[in-house]
Amino acid sequence: MPILVRAAEREDVPALVCLRLANAERHVQLDPVIYRVPEVEAVRRHFEEVLAGESKVVILVAEVVGEVVGMVEVVLLADPPDHQILAPRRAAEIHTVVLDGHRGKGVGAALLTAAEKAAADSGALVVYAGIFTPNEGAVRFYSSAGFEPRGTLLSKETGALSGMARP
Image 1 (tube, rainbow, N blue to C red):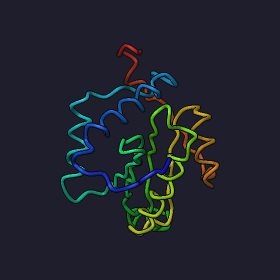
Image 2 (tube, one colour):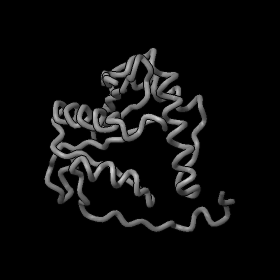
Image 3 (cartoon, rainbow, N blue to C red):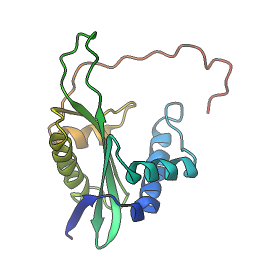
Image 4 (cartoon, rainbow, N blue to C red):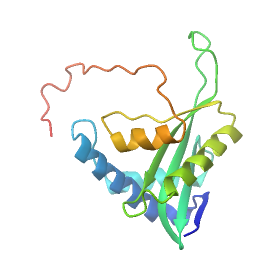
């Protein structure tokens, strides 16, 4: 079936909300300490704001037979400030979501190709795909598209959450 990738429109907000919530539920199953399912209203508001005006976020959707079955957000990052040692290189983060039942059919690849073009068209020289918990499917997907490890992101909890209940 043909896959149409296009810029998201305001009419797509309900589908975008469903995609974000489905993605959140999938990630909570991977690691309920790192991930959460956000409030529906907050998700709706985010997409409405992004699609309403100038934003550093580009949202593309994938349609199959008129149904939105995937999306990718391209988040343009600010150049490092002059006082930092990183060479200034425009970069973008990408976040890809494809509904169950449509994975493995080229939807993610089509979204990723379009996202890379959108990032390049915005001047980004590098695209990042952050994967913050063991997610073999995501690593396999991005690796098959030519993404490679770039450095190491280390983290440590500060203990500020020690009094809070954990899921």
